[in-house]
Amino acid sequence: MSDNVAVVTGGSSGIGAEICRQMLAVGYEVVSLSLGKPENKHTRLHAVDVDLTDRTATEQAAADVAQRFAVTHLVHNAGAIRPALLPDVKLDDLDTLTQLHLGAAITLAQAVLPSMKRDKFGRIVLMSSRGALGLATRTAYAATKGGMVGMARTWALELAADGITVNVVAPGPIAGTEMFHAVVPKDSERERALAKAIPVQRVGRPDDVARAVLFFCDRDNSFITGQTLYVCGGASVGSLVI
Picture 1 (spheres, rainbow, N blue to C red):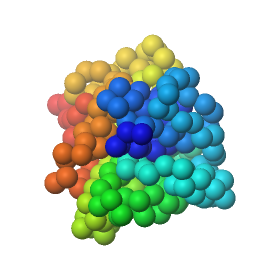
Picture 2 (cartoon, rainbow, N blue to C red; picture 1 turned 30 degrees about the vertical axis):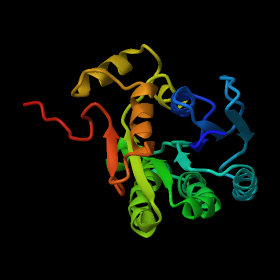
Picture 3 (cartoon, helix red, strand yellow; picture 1 turned 120 degrees about the horizontal axis):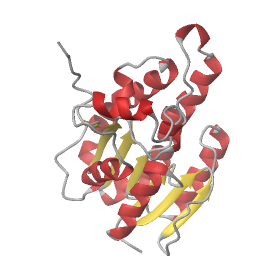
């Protein structure tokens, strides 16, 4: 088994699938926790079918993975949007996204911490979003994605002495993902207008995000923790056209 054993949530498609692909390419053993099986097949890729919005199912999957693997890396990438303007926000959606974005991360981290602490090494990467800075129709999404940043900073302080770093990657608009194209139709005028509004003049790709994740996961990057890296083409900086 590889020295690097990564759990990647949402690894069956989009950004998660690309993270798995890049990790496998550099020798990681990868466990994908996702709804559905990854299309990619590899001898070092292990798929666990689980609904991370289900607390009990998440606890069972986390315990099973921790028993079978000495996990060194945790990448919590799985996510959902549930868009709605404020008058239409449903508290059930907030509950669901709280479990998916925050509760599942806590459960998985608690399951893999014993082996990380034993080996005095670990890398945890949480996937937030540029949307956490504010975006119309994103009440539940922004609240829970913003919560991931505060949670990561807290964990970074608690776990630093154990050789465990905790960082956040916050993507901007990433084409080629189900989440993005559920809101912005592929090759539409809306997608082209969005690209023009981004300082680098294009929307992102899953490989842009995966490279940032692998940067934080690198064993040599032990002096970086509690940080948030926006992979957004400059969209988090903002622009003013006069």
